Amino acid sequence: MPRRRSYDQYCAAARALDVVGDRWTLLIVRELLAGPRRYTDLHADLPGVSTDMLAGRLKDMEGAELVTRRRMPPPVSAYVYELTRRGRDLLPVLRALAEWGAPALEEPRPTDAVRAHWFAIPLLRALEGEVEGVVRVTLDEGEFHLRIGGDGPPEYGDGPPSADTADAHLRTDSATCRALASGESTLAQAVRDGRVAVTGAGRLAGELRERYGPLLVE
Image 1 (tube, one colour):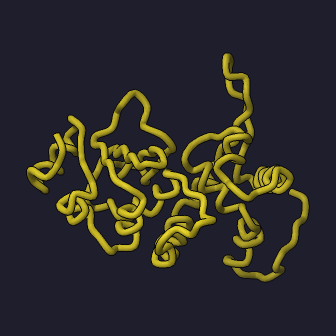
Image 2 (cartoon, rainbow, N blue to C red):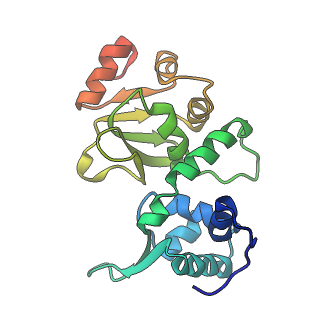
């Protein structure tokens, strides 16, 4: 790995920042935690990053063994970037940052870009202990899905889950997601206030109906 700027401090936090402390690096990790992405997809979902900056950061992250680049099989015939195991291990770091930053969201600024899957990491914390299974979440801005509970760590992905495997489907809005993430509201409160509608035939959807009653949408 070529030498880059370093804090030159014998400290675990400083060593970590040597690798992920540059501008855009952790946001690229956020995007790739949702699954392998083409360069053009990454650029589209990172508004404000220049093509040179993104290419440079991806090259640095490959050198640090955070990401790999591979060619998709035909008929796609495109290259995608995906996280290595070490890259995926940054999810708890992103979760801690999202928890710390949630109170600062307030109302979106006129210049703020919004993507639905950016609410996935904050919602992992908000829904843990409330649900277990695959949850599809639909906002006006798009869809994402969460895998919570079970044997593995929690995960999220952009778009709906494959083969319609969701155990429950939550329809809500970005303001409610923000309230759930910051702790201003619980899932139960949001459902009872009509800010979250739950559908689906899976066990989880049934459990939510039983728990929260007839306000849920069948």
